[in-house]
Image (cartoon, rainbow, N blue to C red; front, side, top):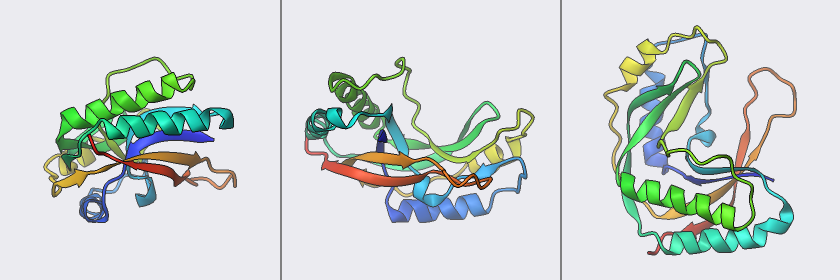
Length: 185
């Protein structure tokens, strides 16, 4: 299974972001992500062997049990080169980063071969581009003042990513929550 650990925004936060994204200037070079794919990835694991799942579940459960709930809100805009447009997070960023570190460590200790560790950048991707010359500045400027309503992050989710298989241009991955653990630290 292709898996990642994530924080999922509640429907109210999704609705606010939906409104902000709908008001962005059009850009034919961008492929807009779908709302079911809006999440904060904490640790991307890639393909995980079935035999590692029991240990992974146990360790992610421990990571959630050591982490207290924390406030978060969608905030502003950012980008990764001309490849991705995203909104960030504000509020309990220390809690979010700690949960990301714990999810990464849980996967490693469960035997999941993780990519080289990088500093965590909290982001929720709203659009992608395969064009090197895509100009994201109008969208970045329009999304920059966005401030969502705070909510309490109270769960860690393990999400399965089902990659497109139809070959239809623009088809996006489908996401399904495999397991969730309450934050109780």
